[in-house]
Length: 424
Image (cartoon, helix red, strand yellow):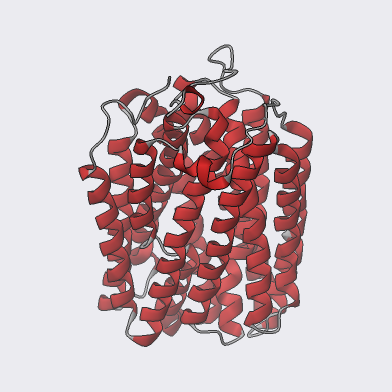
């Protein structure tokens, strides 16, 4: 492998360790606004689809298809940004696309338009994600990556706390007067346009991109030159992803478990509140985990993050086995899922920056996103399908096995000493 592809070679590294700079703050604010919009819609989507009479299998298919479309776009967008030497204009447009797509849910009379809107939204997420991560990685020094990526994840997840709280509050005000009607859900989808479009504006105004020379290589040549240790991380992440089902299925699980005892409206609100707790844990854990990985290394913490996801799935399966009927009994599953996603999102992103040179980081984040999305497609479709065809117990057991297997694979893979925190 030539020197231009060497691991950790920063062509124009930041000059000091002041990691909380304008780009980090701007990207954090953008992520916060984008997730307020996204999570307002996500928190109420299972309830909306329940009112429309849509099955868990369809919900799983919607989430899986949207995830997979986004994932393949991540690969192309990341490589293209490396090739042309610019990332910001495409990322800004993608934020606006995702914000606009959320409002389309308000027009849906049945699931096909929900699928189209979700796919358009995740298309935008797929384009922007590797570009945002690459700009973030270029804006900080190697020994502060964990903190910066953790900060960005915390900003994203604070938005994921605020969004469902707004949705739950609005639903509680509107639903009693319009019980059994999709109208309250439509109002919330329209209001979610405001922070969604604000995210595109924030990214365009606040984030500065350092220009880089283009990398005129073909897609497969760029992929081929990714380091071996990164490919090992990719293998484990793909296996874990095959059990990492969409969080909307968790909300649906709470709604179905609680509805017989509490009614659909209260069950939907409780499911959304549990999702808020999940996101509070996610937000609170992201920065400390990232900072800890700067000191202790990332690989071992990521193994634990994969295991936490498996335990969450097991807890949901057990909830259906024991037919739990209170939100408190479901709380541990949502807390463990929050811990898991905080560790996975912060550490996979930081490890990618550790292992891949700046000129190929767009491609690397795109490949990682594609691998995650293929796993998410399998997870959401299989979990939703098993839920409908067999039982939710079998569905969540499958998820737990795949996530635990990903943890084992990551633990057992041959690894270059120190490569999980290599900085240059």
